Image (cartoon, rainbow, N blue to C red):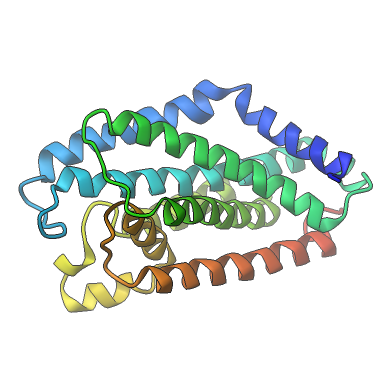
Length: 253
């Protein structure tokens, strides 16, 4: 049976972004579609993708996953920093919720937003370019697991940050560069050997490559390796987030 406190917090977190859907759902979809229109037009004859695959088709899964990543992180991180600054985080901490339930509510709300925005981008993009589906299971696993991983990272960033400037710096100097340099707009096989090696150090690369495999059955590395990397990242971040919540790090003053 679902704990009512957990359900209430989860409902509150989903309602928070639903009430401003124009900003949290519609705006990211439009921004990503602008990326799609610009990059597909400019780079389709200049960037090599997989054999016998159009660049436009190659681009869509990467953009969908990039949208999932960025919005999952934004949801949990912004919610926590707002609650800390306004002071209402104390009411959540005083409720009879375990640290795991607190974590799960914020993380699952981030998953919902990330997946909803990603689906919106996908539905509109396939109106322009139809895509095959090689493995629906891999698509679902990577969409949910990657959004959960970034939602968890958002919780950690929200706990760590003391003001919006710090959170914006984390997003601008960590999340954005890692997502843009993860193979969204290119296959890493088109890079020199040194930069291919650097790309393999980027966990976002495995998220996008595994998700792309779900569509085409093709990937730069084994999808099982990608799944292992993402699972390991989620487990490590979840452990850290729950530990920080249990300690009350920068939450209890």
